Length: 295
Image 1 (cartoon, rainbow, N blue to C red):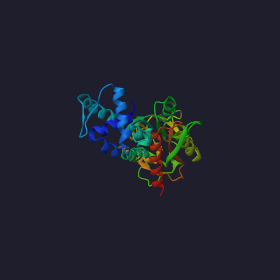
Image 2: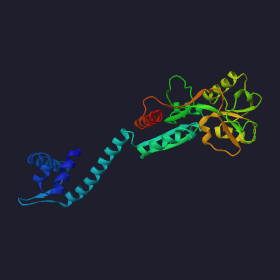
Image 3: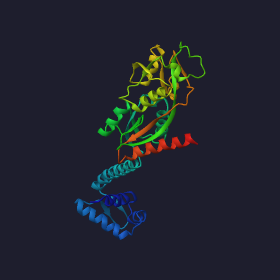
Image 4: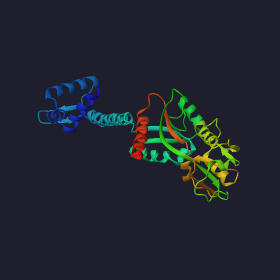
């Protein structure tokens, strides 16, 4: 028995007329009658009682009709869900992100993606860049927001760029300056992100200081940008941070632009080969937003 037999049977059961059912199915009446007879033979019981004047369901036919409707409804739902999944409109994505990305590009992309694809469940995991690269290769995340550079063999695409600024304690001697000259911080203890976890952020900061004529004094290391800013507020030291960290307002901290031309740091998306339709839709959302931002 094939699904088409169920569809033929349901059409006749609903119309209780072979001619009308055949018209509805866009087929001739004799072949339809033959298909129903073949179905009855295969089932081993009669579905309809036929007279010259009317067609009625047998008791067994009525039960088969009700159950057949449920089967076709389930099949139609399965087809619909599969089509949605194939278009990236359904499913689940596990998304990793570095803490600093939560203050720039991540919220906008997540909001846009959820608006466009509300049926895709998003699971968010805050991780360092190195953790994301490892989890991606292990299949534990589908996509990630990291600080470049990215090793060869991993798909990546920059989705956000920004300069660096300085975070100072509110009581700092330069807290009232409009801009801060980097070399004036040469004797200050710096709060730094460990290079082993994010060289794409650590290296530009250290190189920037070296171009200004000094190597930063490492006063403290912290694993999260929010922790770095909190340590600045506690007057443990100063920090060079991405410009978007200004969106993280912390009592006791002031953010100042630098007088020198700042290097640009980036946020990039990473994903595995053969991305799922949902990952492809996520990437397209990020690209569309980046294009809008650049206009």
